[in-house]
Image 1 (spheres, helix red, strand yellow):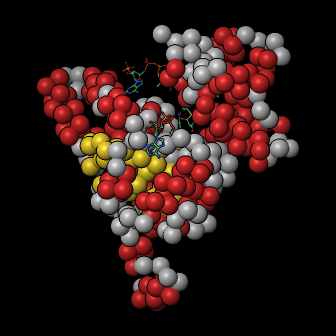
Image 2 (cartoon, rainbow, N blue to C red):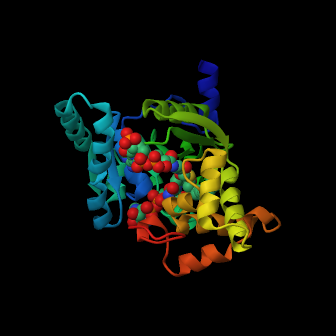
Image 3 (spheres, protein in one colour):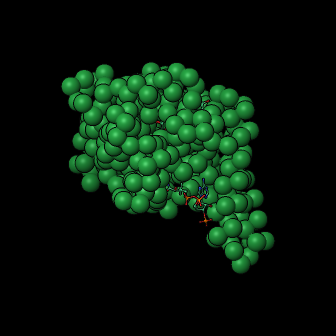
Length: 309
Ligand SMILES: CCCCCCCCCCCCCC(=O)CC(=O)SCCNC(=O)CCNC(=O)[C@H](O)C(C)(C)COP(=O)(O)OP(=O)(O)OC[C@H]1O[C@@H](n2cnc3c(N)ncnc32)[C@H](O)[C@@H]1OP(=O)(O)O
Ligand SMILES: NC(=O)C1=CN([C@@H]2O[C@H](COP(=O)(O)OP(=O)(O)OC[C@H]3O[C@@H](n4cnc5c(N)ncnc54)[C@H](O)[C@@H]3O)[C@@H](O)[C@H]2O)C=CC1
């Protein structure tokens, strides 16, 4: 209504911010395992995607989205391989890559960040892009554990900032956690929910609390599994078998930790143990710290809790 618009204008909120944004052009910052996966799914659902990374090598590998698409197409187009091949080409045409985040952000409806789990680095990039992105552009972070409020504080678009947390591997995992801070507007939140649905995912609404829903439960579970192993109360293999066959998880805690990346898990636990020193569930884990110090980060480096071919 007019009264609502006037109120928004008085509060210094622009009119473009009170409309839902239909997201078509997406810039993804960070072309690692999450960024590439999100780029693939967004491109496959008709969005124009620009994938940005500081490393040219990463962007060349992210072109390997093709490998994952082939796995998807094998099932989806089982009866028509020719149509499958055409689908892959169409999806790949929707993805361009760049090392220049500033020019990428200038023509996007959504800037989604999936870079290293470090508050300062995330604030730096968003602070920079806030100055060049169009007024209507929504910013979102795929952070696993950092407060969205803290990341958003580097910008002047608090009402157009939210969390959009995907799960690994993105093409397979159906969930997206959509996070509203106390400043996220309803229009922004609804736009992010709609975007998640258009991607074929199921969104859940989360508050800006540590680990949102999934990681608040998964990370303590992993930490307890490592402590159980350190006490000598079970082998890694038996703990993994137990959680798969006894609790129905597709991967055991050690397998999943190697899959996610031990560096990411260490960033999460270090952050939480510093912030909540009295919570024993978040206490540092010697074995995790040792493996990370040795560069054993899991599947991506060939070794973590297990050796990988
Ligand atoms: C025990 C609980 C304690 C856990 C502690 C863990 C700690 C975690 C800390 C969290 C850190 C923060 C991370 C974060 O923020 C959030 C996360 O992402 S948490 C991780 C969430 N992910 C999972 O939990 C994954 C669980 N695993 C699975 O669902 C399956 O194992 C998986 C789908 C990955 C693979 O399936 P699997 O049967 O094991 O292997 P297959 O190779 O046979 O694949 C099956 C099927 O899927 C297709 N596929 C697999 N990967 C891809 C891909 N990248 N792209 C496309 N398609 C893929 C594959 O082709 C197969 O298709 P078929 O038709 O069946 O052949
Ligand atoms: N690994 C996982 O299972 C999940 C991770 N996340 C979160 O997603 C984010 C990314 O995680 P991953 O993809 O696993 O990491 P990754 O290490 O695979 O990829 C991060 C990429 O960001 C790039 N990068 C770093 N700084 C940059 C900058 N300033 N500009 C552009 N690119 C930059 C790096 O070169 C690297 O390629 C983290 O915040 C993590 O917590 C969220 C869900 C699941």
